[in-house]
Image (cartoon, rainbow over all chains, first blue to last red; front, side):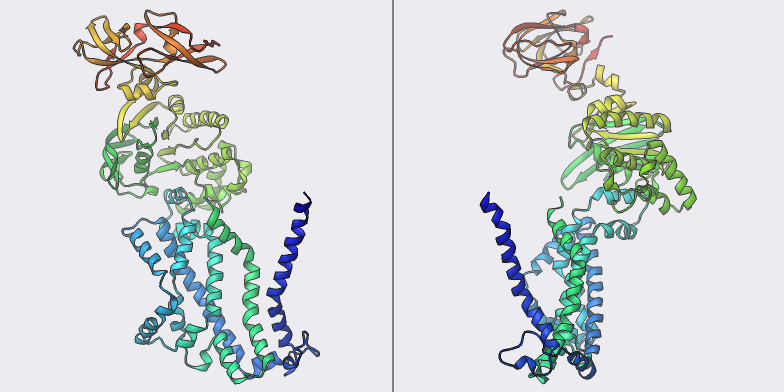
Length: 274
Length: 363
């Protein structure tokens, strides 16, 4: 009994310790972004800014055009999320609940495609998009994110738990397939839609490699690409870099925290719902 | 004029033939029950009528019209599912109103219809609740309500009581009977529970392995089962089936020598069969008594189930594999191993030929 009583303290203590270790870089990123130019290079490095300032943020948005990059990232991430949800949810539902010839064969083929690493597909994809004239366009960034096997798989597995009788009841009530999808299926899939939406948004927001390959003009850059370019120009300016990092990380952090309740529910329900 | 007519319905899933050419007519206002063991095709047949499955062959008519190519919603049927199939994100009101809304009824009409159905089913106070806030019985009522508001020509019920506990099932059974009495609409009800079938049905369809074994009112099925399958399926506990050989058949009845050596008389016309033919004698547990009756067999008690009002006892006979079941009123607990003479009357006997078809009973 004594051993069991002390367990929560040890476990919670260890978790708090690990959380602090994980959060420290985030904390220091914010702290440095508020420091005076060159302050972070002092030895030993200061933990907190001696004279906090928003100067780095003003420079970031004023001189480096970060506002434009932020907007680019936001528009692309929102579009990628919307497109990916549209295609993945409709396809996942169709694979789970609609009867059509070759359904299982096509699904198995899709699953087999999961083993191909994204990097392997990049060069053929680049050449395809080049032929289509989509290089250096936003559409070129979006096309590969529109549907992905993992998303379809995730939705399909969740949609399998939607009772078929419920869909049949709607059919008997006179609802067409689109009505059934919109009025009955989408509300039932809400947790997995939120989960998938967060995945899609994060993937697009944080994506560095593909936008780097596809986008050529500076003013079309997304935040990760722009910050990488910025770091080459301002390699000594750690405070400005950290302000850029804060602008990149914080929105998705808040998005994740805000939707965490649905997100976790989605992951759990997908695994335990019978 | 028939409410529902099925003509040579066939249906396969892959290589498995589920319905093997079924013909059936359901009369207007009739409460028809499809009964049979799991996998016999009764639910598939109901789904073919509803339009949720397409028949591979044959014609489905509802109200005299061929509906093979008609969408489920346009067939004039409403269905209540085993799992209730309520829409979980909608309130009870929205669940019941969904079909009416889609059919373009006005808001006022919809509200009036939903409220009337809710009132009749005693769920008026639940209209604003979500299905997850309801008990099993309440959900079942809402599912019935959703069917009622559509004013269908035919109600289809697919094992609607299977998910309820025993007490609630008895109450809901009564409510189904009352509902039919009040609405007088044609109802087709699928169940594997023969008590539900016997208590609710005007006529019962007994299905087995994709074929109709017999159609008839409950008492016809009980007293005059057409074959061994129906004899064994209808009635609880099941009819005792004793293999034997026909010794003689005349105008008064048949004489059968059982595999255990006893000779018994059965009041059936077995003149179509030749002496020496293999037959099966059937006797219901409630028609056998200890030490009474013109036919006697010897047996030893194995165990008894005391049900309060009646006792069901199981007996073994030397030379026979199957045990003999006896149901008698009152409490009577024979000691295990106790020998006894079990008796039954010739008029209570059923007799089946080697292919399982019943000989005509006398009287």
